[in-house]
Image 1: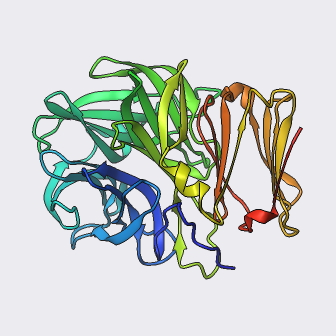
Image 2: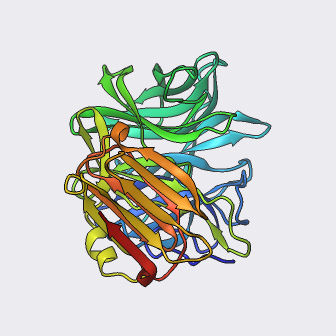
Amino acid sequence: MTRRRPQFHFTPARGWMNDPHGIVFDGERYHLFFQYSPLGTSWEAAMHWGHAVSPDLVQWQELEPALMPCADEVGCWSGSLVLAPQPTMFYTRPTAGEWSRGLVVAAVGSSEMSEWTRIGVVIDGPPSDEFFDFRDPQVRRDGQGWKLTIGAGQRGVGGCALQYSSTDLRHWSYDGVLASRSSEAGPLASGTVWECPQFLQVDGQWVLLVSAMDQAGLAEVLYAIGDYDGLAFTPRTWGHFGHSKSVYATTTFHDAEGQPCVMSWLRELPVDEGQPWAGEQSFVQRLHVIDDRLVLAQHPNLDPIVTAAEPAWRFTINLEEACNGGFCIDIDDADSGWSLVLDWDAHTLHVSADDAVTYVADLRSDGATGQLDVVVDAGIAEVTWSGGEGMYAFMVPDVDPERIDVTTW
């Protein structure tokens, strides 16, 4: 069965899509770039940079791909983009036969960012054999110069992020390991490789977001809040950002008001038979730091659009007011029996399908306070709350909102 395309979660018309990256506001509209393969609905090495634009971060228009592999490239993998002094993208060029050794390639774009001219390789692989799976550069302004953060694995240690510096976006010097964490550290597993590292300030605090993975199947977005001396980042606290395996490859950017925001790839596995596209991007959320916890809320641009839309729907509840009970969202669908239940007395959030519990969250550990927000768009549910860390994303039956039953107690 082919699933209906979402209204507001961006998807390509055809092909496979995963990591979002290079999101910028050019003064008039937002540009979203993303890993994209037009060849089918499964991952391919020959990834392109897809391109979409939006006036409001909610309603997206897909454009022609911005970048495709040239004759001597296996693929154009994830990276980032800066606008000054001219649009410049930095992407990962995988090495054929040696996938763990990525190169960083720069390209400059036209004013509308539809045409790109490669400058060439600006970082020729990891600084030593100590590091592997070197990819996903993030570039940010640092005073009069620039910093580049890139993900990797460190042999005998675990996932890590490395830092480089430049004054001209062309020549980069290696600063050292920005941050690393033992793959054996617990109780929060952080994997052997960090992909898509994002390093930024939120409410005056330094925050590192990483997509942690390992060969055992870990694929989760984590965050750390800590101190930064210009060379090394020392975490004070670690936490979960994505609370389900659907959420991955989170990228950061600043909106037109200068507020720090995120967008994540919502992994769709398996893909429905006959479906011409695969993969969705999450809604955009704004970030805040509260009591050394990274919290997020749906972007305010979503409010008037989804509220007035059909068949998308939204449910919110103040958790303090519900402290003596809870609520249940049931979908009247005999084939699925889907429900989301918040039990405030037990501080748990249960998601069930086919009469089996598929996910349980301990809201006490996640610090759930404030307003809980559930937004559903064509079979995709996102759950966030204003006082708790991270987000949840689930696939739900794609039904008419009139078949949704909400009960509070």
